Image 1 (tube, rainbow, N blue to C red):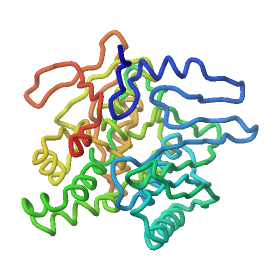
Image 2: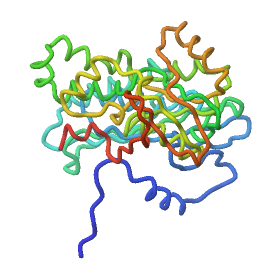
Image 3: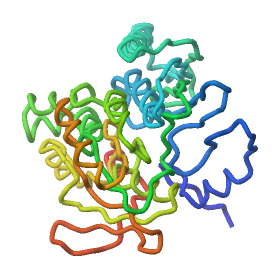
Image 4: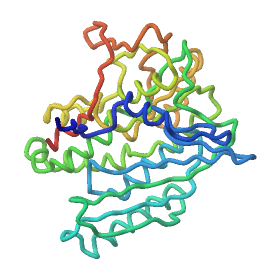
Length: 337
């Protein structure tokens, strides 16, 4: 009997947990490979190194910008500062011109300069192994021990806060990959505005994570593949806690809702770089949200961290209570099926 093939998307948590159980550990490894954690953290004595790796697989337009941003986000979600970027770039044979490579390199360099990151190297080749450009980025940063923040540090009684709207990244991808359909239904101006969600509201949460410094934040997490709901699930898995999420409180931009409705996607499970999830004591949450508002950043309390035996629950728009959805595959994959 033939072995069953794996579906597209992240490995299921139970499979990944088993695989990670066989990896080596060291006393220097402050945060090792684990479900929900954004990056590895390595003790270097007076400071911690923060290391992360992420590929860009859902889109090809501006993939250089995507790669730098999503990897810098992982560093920022740990409370750290991104310093050094490298990338393995594999480009499709028979489709790639020198101009394509020059544009990709220029985009990576521009993104690094904007975020104050040094592009230190990597690897670039043209290969028949891929059908579209593949950029696998690695970011190295640093954080002082007192500022380290983990996905797995949420505490019972914390308020769960969403910073910036859900599915910003998904909106840009939809408008890019389904441009003609979006323009036909909503006009060129709307389509272009949605494509530019890549830059405004933007995929980076570096500034937003830094604005939380000084507040008693327990956990931070950068929701990506699987959307905000999967990001919440990852916090709960890493922290061994339960949660009650208020669907009505989750910020979804009108353009996002419109495009997701057009293509039958649930924005709660659609890739969400550009948003930030964090938890902190309930009595401290209002001040943090006001602080964000003062700096022009949208943020809202969307739920409460509970004991693990409560489970993962969602209060729907109609006030009904049900288990938190489980998006085994990111909603954005429906565009390509």
